[in-house]
Length: 60
Image (cartoon, rainbow, N blue to C red):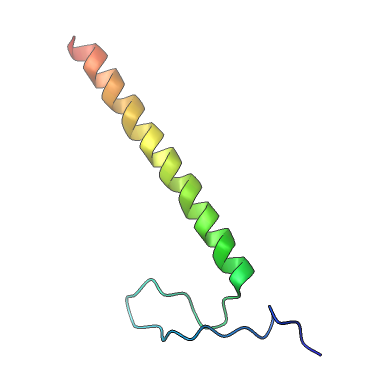
């Protein structure tokens, strides 16, 4: 018998140019992608904050 995670199909249709994952993406893979996005956004926020502080110190 197939594992439930292996036979998963998302109920949403994927449109061209959309960010909807392909139908064969299982929930575990989707959660991993969400965590990757979370850490990427944290890194981007830190980069912007450090650059802003550096610019502020440079000006003042």
